[in-house]
Image (cartoon, rainbow, N blue to C red):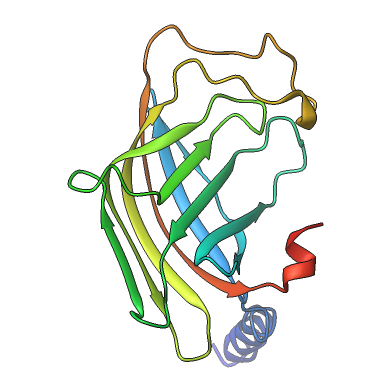
Length: 182
């Protein structure tokens, strides 16, 4: 047993040393369920706020296949200088210009758009935005992905309206205006 204690101590130090200082500054953690199959969508998230209070979130996942990597767009119109909390219930306020689009099969896929559920985003004193969401999304019927992104004109579009659930949380930091345009 005396030999076991130093071994356990070394194992504890080795395991905990790898996690010190490796905190992701802007995590995006989510899962979505489509046709009974649940998938993770995690990564890093930043945002850019233009002069008209239109805020677009940029999510970079760890997927390497550009054409099939899941992606999502979250955009809102809200002045965080006047109110530090943005909250939307899609069931009650479906007409506002804020929305969430999820492309579960990559940038050439038919997107799903926020249809029900809630999203809440708060601005912290350091300027970062953190949020939670629990949404039901509906496929946008008739959508055709743009050839600008390398998508063909006969890209998949379903005959029926599919739905999915999408939930998670994020902590986003602001990016500089010139970096967002690249």
